[in-house]
Amino acid sequence: MPLTEQQVNVISEHPLNDTLDRFRDKLRDLDEADRSWHDATASIILALLDTGAALDLGSRGGKETLADDLFPLYPGVRKGSFKSEHFRRLVRCIINKASDIDIWETVFSVVESLSALTQCPQRSSRLADSETRDIVERELFEEIKNCTKDSATSFSIPSPGAKNRKRC
Image (cartoon, rainbow, N blue to C red):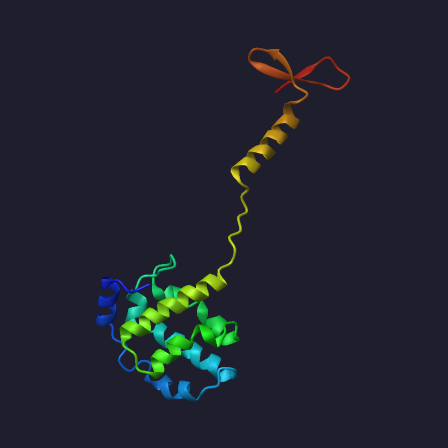
């Protein structure tokens, strides 16, 4: 998805300058199957997190900022949970000295694709309304099934072996 005018303005106000330059040579020489690739990619995420743009760009994933979306990816990258193909376009942008706009568009794309892979299924401790109603109705029925109508204002529960009735 292309960047909005507001996002482009934020990126222009917070240029990357030489933030990613230190990675360029290292990325050219890395083998994607090597552990050092994960370390370098994780370092890139940290470098991007430390920019004004990441802190000022809004999240597309429902969080507050892009930094909030990026940060949870860091541990997965360090552990090797993500394939290099997810970051290949970003690495190419850095190696080729792409514009800040292209880099941030790519960062958004990476975040969106990896967020879809890493989202936990929503678990709810609450039951659906119909399930809750069924449970409550069953429990209520169990409580009142032995009650008999005593008068217009109350119900009575027969006491075992006695004629006395308890009021419900």
